[in-house]
Length: 151
Image 1 (cartoon, helix red, strand yellow):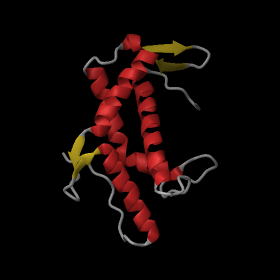
Image 2 (cartoon, one colour; image 1 turned 60 degrees about the vertical axis):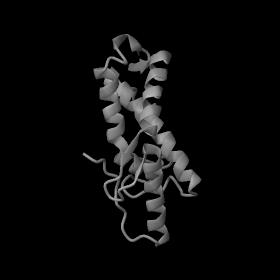
Image 3 (cartoon, one colour; image 1 turned 180 degrees about the vertical axis):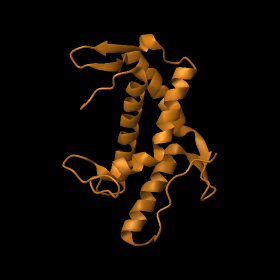
Image 4 (cartoon, one colour; image 1 turned 45 degrees about the vertical axis):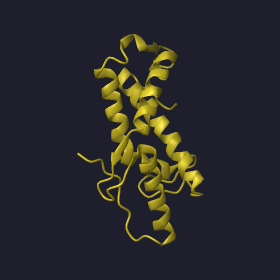
């Protein structure tokens, strides 16, 4: 961890983005794509640029989950601890379990894609975006439409 989060909100965001990163990485590899060659993020040794590109489209999911868990009191101040030697704020084991439950519920929640009209869970939305990128790279799709939440 380069710079540990310094407060509870950033601790949740960091953990949530890590979970999202793992999910997207798995889907990209399942589709046989190279996760290290992207479009928006720099190609750097050990930096999965394509994964970071896709995370941008789904960042709001983690942001809203973070607000939800704090506003609903699912996680409280006691669910975090500070380490002086690492100068950071971290989730307790129990807090990670709670946040992971909320994450899984959100990933399986269904929503409508405003472009296609299809209703599917977030994991399928992510998979759909991975397929779109692979089709653009293969030349079978000319335009990449980013994921949009329906408001």
